[in-house]
Length: 436
Image 1: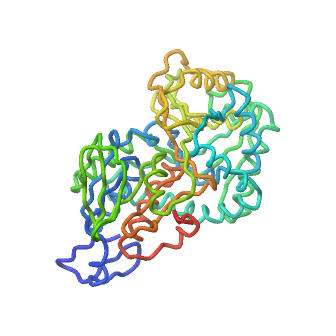
Image 2: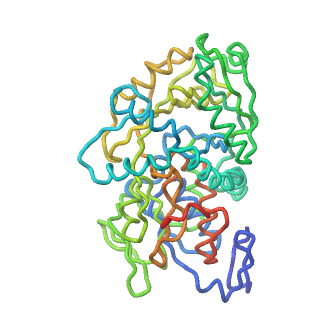
């Protein structure tokens, strides 16, 4: 991708497409990005590289939301639509079981009820296959997008890894294997190896004797999210992007050919805006024709000291707990609470993660854990992201990624920048249109 400089060239290459200077002058020269997570910062980085003046505004500070404490998997083999037939069973358990991996706190909330009402239509095998057809072309470019940021000096390198999905009993692997075989049937490359419990412990000594089976998912990667976002933010600052903290946005509107971003501390004007504010994107995008329900799915994480460093990321599939190497520690991530994005951390949910994970692991200092965190992931009813133009000229959306905001963040920024600066929707964005 070449940086366009209109003073010295009469054309630019944006996403592999030649754009003349005459065409390019029709598109935005200034953009406000609402949201300073990996998705918003990736949008800012990709736009700035094409000569756009960019401001990033965040309700707290960059990386404070779902980008901070998640598992950090960069794993196309696990990037699948969340709604599926098994999700309905989890939904029933979530309402009656306090320590379920999924928790739903029912309350008098019209947005929550609208979100829950819309999910069952997409929890079918047919809907899953249709959504997988949308995910596959995105998944094929995940590594490429991370490598482009690294080569552009915008973030640290991703770490190559095999992910070990581990199970106490062989029958527990059926659900994950069904998804992985479904990926392969949809045309996505998936490399698997079945391991006995002993073979899994040879690869990862921190697994306990209670692990009876593992699936090695080869050729994946991972990052440490908060470090990655910090480096990405520093890079975009160095390139001239202004990042404004403590700037919660209440609404955006188009007025007299300009975009007005309304916030508590004042207004910002620009040619265009990108709504990349995670679990808060629904309220801001709805006035612009984005009617796909979005709700917070809160995940928890914490850091645990280890007797010896991990060699591989570990996924305890039945418990929905992901464990990622972090130097001498492990970052433990899990659960899904359908809850308000602003609700405080629930300490009992941290204990639930420990209760489900501890018997399957050893050498973990659970009492010495630090960095307890909860973050809100933006879930859509159909399990697909919202990436592209809204019904309001100049208002774009980059959200609704669910659990895959880190995985798809750099690619989202690249593809959306192409659409903003050429007016042409990249083929990879078919099926994720915000106003679908």
